[in-house]
Image (tube, rainbow, N blue to C red):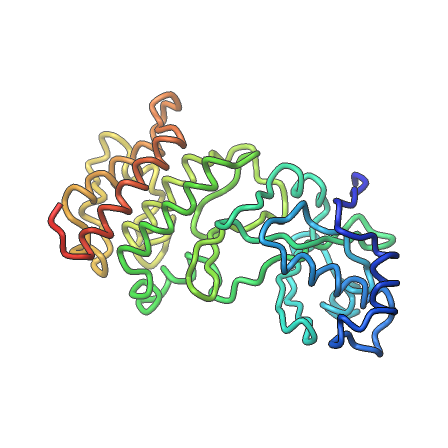
Length: 308
C-alpha cells in the first residue's frame, strides 16, 4: 500500500480545531463529538462548499467511524460499499473501501461536473484498506433504470442523449482508462450524469471506447449487455460486421419514435464505430464529443418543434 499524501486544504487540522474551539462561526457543531470527529466534519464541510476541489481531503479515521459505524469499519473489505450520513451537515455519502486509494485519486479521479465527487479519504489503522468518501447518488446507476419499464420511461430520448454526451466529456478528459458501461454511470437526484469513481483499478482488457459504445447500445436498445430478459447477448458479437443483426431492429420501443432518422443514424454509426475491431478505425474521443454535442443541440431543436 502506497503512503497516502494529504492534499492541500485551506487550513491544517490543528489550526481548524483551534478555530472551532474559539470561534462562534460554527454553531451547529455537535459539542458532544470528539475533536477528531469535529475536525473531520469541518474539513468535509469545506469540501462540500467548494465549487472546485484542490484534491480530496485526508479525513481522520474517527470521523469515518462516525459516518459508517464501528461495525462497518471493522468488517471493511476491498470493494465494499457503505452508506454514511452526517445529520449535522444534513448530508449523505457513499463510502467505498479500496486497497489502492492513492492510485485512484491520482490516476482516475477528475474534478468535473459529470464525475461523482470524491470529497475525502482515510486510511484504516492496522489495515491495507482505505475509505473513499464520495458523493451519494440517490438514483443509482443507469443499468438499474434499464432493468424496469418504469425506469426506461424515465430515461426519455433526450435524457439518453444527454447521458451519452456527459459520459463522453469524461471519456475525453480521463487520465487513465475507465469503464463506461451503464453500471458505472450514476445519476443524482435530478438525474444528472455522474461517472462513478472506481473502487478498484479497472482491468487492462477494458477499452474505454468499446465500453462507451456498449453504453450507447444499452441506451439505444433499452437492454443491458448479456441481458437474459431481452436476450440480445454480447453487443460486440451481435452487431459485428457480417452478423446480419441490426441495432435498428432492437431499438427500445419507449424511445424509438422520438429520434429523427438523421439523429438515429448518427448515434448508430458512432456506437458501431466504438466497437470496431480495428482500433485505428474507432472514432476519437474528440469526434465522439463533437458529434454528440451536435446531436444534443439538434435534439433540443426537435423538442422545440423545429424540423431538422
